[in-house]
Image (cartoon, rainbow, N blue to C red):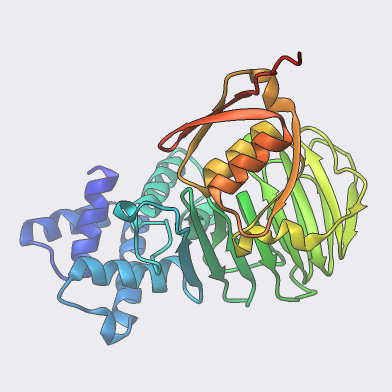
Length: 353
């Protein structure tokens, strides 16, 4: 059976909606491998222990609610927010389950099961595939999540956060692609570590912002409270680390170590959490990407050399029209707009007579 079919069978089996034939086929699959039976029994037990209000006439809806609360994110609180600029036809519920669905979890588990059959130890990694979760936001969308240890994270648009179901062991480790603001609960015996494509950020308890979209080939870290240690995430590189305290900033370029800390205003780097935008000597290419993530828009330039030109500005309450006008005026550009398609070009120079 394919992963998709297997997921559907397990879902129906656990919720008591299997036909006799489907039940027989699933139980036959469970008997072929103890690991198959274990995964079904674990889900079945959690489903049985779920509070009575989870059960509803809408079995599919009840299952989704149950899975998000009890399996995917026990002890977590997740809220997704949408910018007002998002078209009404694509609005989703403000309160929505995380972007992880059980299909992806089982897909990872079954792929891992195949690796086990090829000689990998089952006890070594099974839990990693089964329990790793991912929260993803679309363009124009932000999300907030509270882990069971009390750590709070605000996730910016077009970003993803991977984290374990539970923080076991001596560290609390997560992976980020995008931008997030962290308020980490203090635990000196269990450091909190954020991995990005380019940086490794370790803290004991603090508040800091990380901007690290993999397509931007660098990671920016700003501390608003406490202390963090930043180094390259590439283990083969011995570039050392820098320690940031309140109000300090560092950048880790891909393939390099972190820059020396410099003082900055951390509040400006947190404006995105309150509807604003901040650019500090940022290449126009990255500025346009940020705007696309924030608004429903596609931005291009007719001259590729413009993409490297740096742009600096702060928008406390960002409005797309205002942002476009400021970019055009400060960089001596013009732009044309056709719905959500926007193109910048160099302003025509008027002859002086």
